[in-house]
Image (cartoon, rainbow, N blue to C red; front, side, top):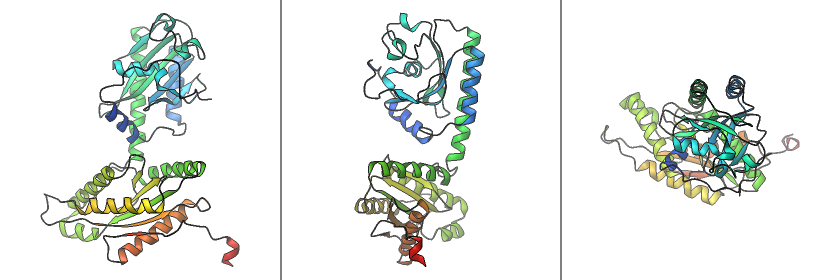
Length: 345
C-alpha cells in the first residue's frame, strides 16, 4: 500500500538551498525504485532490535516523495514528501529528535501522527554522501513518546554510516569508473524498467547506440591516457546534451547506449544528430589537432520483441553508419518486430 502522493494534508517545508544539486546526486545513485537488498534490510532490522523501536527505515527524499529503500514495521514503500519528518532532518543537517510528535506543532497534524503508523517518537540521522549532499535519513520511530539517549543517537549515527557505505558499494557496481555514467548492467536494468513503463503507458521507446570513430587510432597515436581523456569528454558532453529522463551508459570499450523513453523515431533521429554534433564540436587543449566524432545507430522498441533483438537492430544501424563513412546517424525505419518461429522453417 502507498499513501496518496497528491495531498498528505500537511504543508511542506522549504526545500534545501542546494535542492537541485541534491536531487541530481540522488538520481546519479540509481537507487530509487530499486528492489529490496539484503545489506539494507539487515541494517534496519539491527537498528530496530538495538534501539527497541517497532519502526526503522532508510528514507530517501525524491523531488516530491519519500521513498524507503528498506523499512521495518511500516508496510508502505513511499509517501508524499510534504508529510516526511525526514525532510526536516536533512534541513537540520544534524541528528533530528522528536520525543512526542503530538506535542510538536510541526507534526501534531501530520497524517502519520494522527493515523497509521501513529508516530510518536522519532530519531533521524541524515545520510551524507561523499559529494556532500544529504539524500535522506536513517530513522528510528516509536509509537509511544520516548527520549533517545546520547548513546542511542551515537549508535544510530554509526548505523547511518554503514548505510552510506553500502550505497557507495552499490554505486561502485553501477557506475562506470572512467566515465562516471551508468555501467553496462546498470544501463540494462534501468532500460528494462523504462521498457516496462512504456508498455504500460503505450508510449514508444528508442535506443541509440554509438561508438567513437577511429578510437583505436587515437589510442595507438596518442596513448591510452589521451584515449581515456577522449572517452570522459565525450561521455560528459553527451550527458549534458540529452534529456534528464534519458538513460545513458557505457556498454563497451568505446561503445555507449542511450535509451530514450517516450520517444518516436523522428524525435530519436533529431536527438541522435544533436548528440553527434555536440561530440564533433569537442576540442582538446592537451592534444593539438585531435578531433572526435561518433557513428550512431538507432531503433524503436516493439513490445512484441525482446531487448536483445532491439539492441541488435540498433547495432546493425550502427554498423551501417560506420560503413557509410562514419560521423553519421542511421535509424531503423520501423519498430523491431520478432519473426514468429513458424516463419523461420
